[in-house]
Every structure is written in C-alpha cells, then in structure tokens.
Length: 162
Image 1 (cartoon, rainbow, N blue to C red):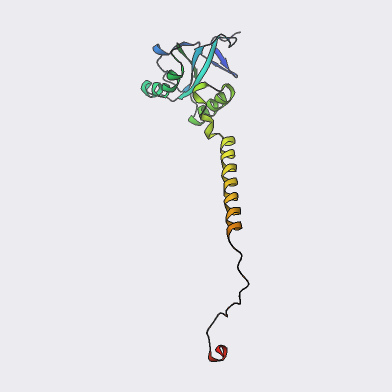
Image 2 (tube, rainbow, N blue to C red; image 1 turned 90 degrees about the vertical axis):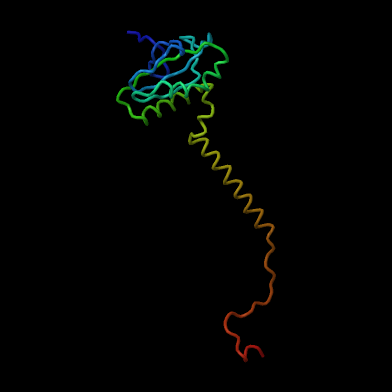
C-alpha cells in the first residue's frame, strides 16, 4: 500500500500544493516549503524550509515565519506540504523539525544550526582557547617579584627599630 504525498525521513507529508492558496490546518504539525527541482527523487521537490505550527495557529503568524523561504525561492513557484501531528507537544514537533533540518539542510535554515550542541561546543572551545592565550600573555608580561628584603608584619617596637 503506497502512501500519497512526499516522504521526508520516515514521515509522510501531504501532497505538495501551491503556497499561495494554502491555509494551515487547525491541528498541530509540521510543514515544509518546497521548490520544484528535477534533481530530487522520487518526487521533484526540494525542501527549502521546515516549520512548525500549533493548534489553531493564525495563518498570518505561520506565513510571517515563511518570509525567508519566499525570498530564497528566487521567484520560483513555492509549494507547501504538511505533516499533521495532532496531540503532539511543542517539544516533540521541535525535535522532529530539528531532525529534518539536519537531514535535508534546507536553504532557508542554514543558520538554525547555530543552536545545535556541536556549534555551541565549537564556540565554547574557541572562547576557552582565547581565554588561555590571554592568561598566558598576562603571565609572561608580568615581571617576577625581585628578591627584596621583606618587612616584618606587625607592630614596630623600639627594639626592632634599632
């Protein structure tokens, strides 16, 4: 039995329709904005954006989220495909969205990876390296204390002054 629609990973999204005539469903789920690309198979649609919507999300908020995809479409006709996920939590939808973004590298979400642990790890390692260089530089530029005679700590009496 073949499912109609388009498959991303192991998830079947709806058959792509024109973005211009799309209204978001009333249930929660994910959507993908697509462009036609003959190099993609088995269906000639390349995802350029994966988004998430909640129950009764206003269409204006979802379409505002798609503005980057519209500009990245470069005048090409944009399509949308939906994966309904009723009774799902926001965290579940975000996790699946992140999985799809990592798997397909959509053109409009190249910066999404900035929040991924691997990128944070690299940024932290770079900051630690800079910090270590600063400490090394400070330690090497600070002169070592000269072997000067030390004064005694405490009260000075007449006996110790003589």
